[in-house]
Length: 433
Image (cartoon, rainbow, N blue to C red; front, side, top):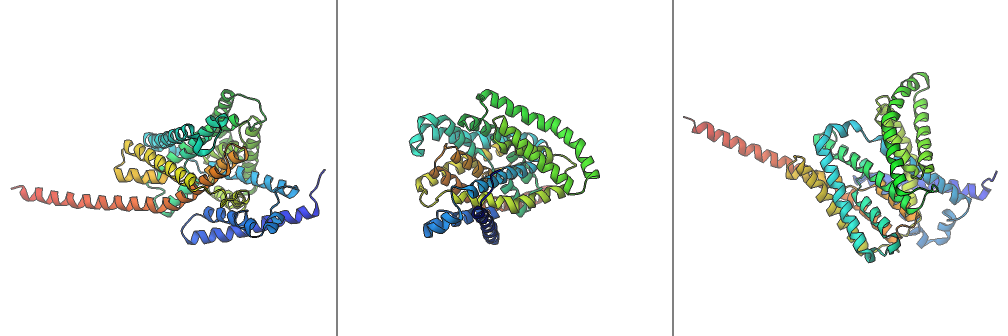
């Protein structure tokens, strides 16, 4: 059996030590400015990567983060595990009961906030390929990818923002969360087809087979799979040590589902996401167990992935201002307009609808993961990836203040309406003889 050389072991442990320590430092600084830790973690990768460290000291960067060799392969494996676990906890946040409770309104918001940006993103990239520097050979797949990225909503990020604003359990908060859940589920179904069309799979299947396998796996896990988990989890909780038993089962199923979907030609991250949905929806998988899983993954594996983003892309040399501004404007306007129209048709007033639109416009973890996979698969170049990365960071920065402003404006409107209503009622009373 091949083993790591002494030098590779030293380099690997230094890599992990620096990644975890530096990401924590910048993550805490990010929190001081009322921003999610992911912003600081991405910045940490940019500083440690070729953008800054590689430019200031190429020898140190190449020694610390080599692109070839055993330590590079092992680090890549750890990053892959981190991505799978990130999608697993994203799935845990999907509450199917909330989706059903919001009903028609959530369906309208999710449909319009997905269809409009998807159509705009697809149309712009398909009819203006020269702007993106895309060849005709990959134009269809590339356009599907751009539409999917623009249609996604960062469920973990918007959930954190709503909690910080103390409106997570409000009707508006539940509407945004339910809509984001539906959008993410649909986008992952679309992206599995894109992965198959990219030819990244070892399984020789056509698009039709991929769709059937994807839908079949999803339906099976969310029906029979959920039923089986509800039968097994009570026994696990009673008979095995807590929380070790339920955590071992959760991670074991996560990796098994990831292996299965990777084997049949769907990326491993989709299997992890769906098993997370099935587990998180079970009443026997407690909130305390979810919190332990979240803390373990968010503090150990998530920083490794987000730092790795900057380790392999030179943001400075691949920063195209026209690409970044164009991508952001199209993504921001199409998503906001789509979600706002959906909320308005669902019965919300104009200001509340705009708040929903701003909330649904948050991009984050999933878009970066999709962008990373597309970059590794050769579907997009570094300039487009940097544009996606910048869009994610900017939407995270502006989401909280814009949603807060809309909520405060709606409260003022409500108070003003009550004031005039009281005056009219008083006049009516006085006019009665």
